[in-house]
Length: 510
Image: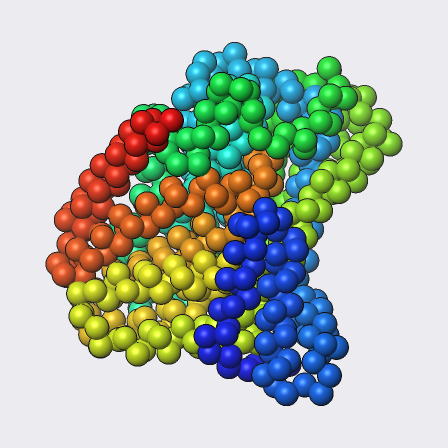
């Protein structure tokens, strides 16, 4: 299928899907209608002979093309691991153990955030692992599922984008290398870390909100319902624990999770050539930069499922039939998340590959490239955020913008090339963080067991405030040739003041 430049119509599908999801509280039909609208625009644009049939053909062709079966397999296997661990009593035992040692809601939230920042290898792995481990603890202290999903989501992509050894660093490095503008793409990526204001502020805000207990907006209401009424949100996916074995121990939870981490790290290194014959990839950094994260995560999740089998069946925590039935039920439990991922990939493919949304955004960027030079980082941040929010992909966004941003920044002011690159990455993470069609947002909802629309609506205010403060930081950086102390200091001060003000306002309104 040849692409068709649809101009402003190219942003109709994601906007329609987002608006419908927020209005109807139903994400499947919203995404499907967004996809069909994009396919219809494409069919009309290319002058199809029979538009209705062409629309359906385009929809399912792009769906088949864009599905990443490795990620589907990883999510399904991880669902199986989660289910059999719970069925064997591991989750219940861990919850009892952790509850005895985590003595407050604050400690439970901080522990969740700490675990999220510790798993920096990959955001998919982060989202589902943290939710699995911490859900029993946060439930015990009446922390809403919306708050749990927010903590998970805000320590997934933001930590991966500033971790030199991660699948995200590998993706960014490959795009930087393609520009040919840097002697070392790894060094160029590391130089962007201090200026990635959105990622830094998003991580800071998680711990600030948890320590100071300063929720606001829809999240404030969700937390009040959880504390006062015991209404945590959607907890249906925990029902299988009612039939959990009473013989399970905390180690039945810890060993499979640790094995998953070890297998994932080893598999990432293996796929990156660390154990191969090419000496180029015999360093950890080079191997991670060359790895295939989706393949490695499938291998790791399968290995962890084998560990579960060897741990549970010989000890008769589960029979062979119960284990296999549990694995199948776990895969079934991931079906909604997998369906949303497929639909999200499809609408992203319709926009990027067929309607050329990136080209439309590029024309906007180039039309305004003569704007005040000092505003360039802020302008890049806005464009990246808009594109990532619309398409639901941070990787696709910085893949599109990095080849444009680097030569523009070098021509205008070489002193702020690093700041402009950081603004590109930060804006990409912002859009991905709060977009309803983002795979990370979807997996955060699944990992926390939270209604997806509730997660999006409660998190958006937090993400938007961080984005505004980051934008101010980039304005200051643009006019001070990248002064890190002034720009990041202004952003931090504004964030703290704004959050405290909004919290007081929410308390007053309540």
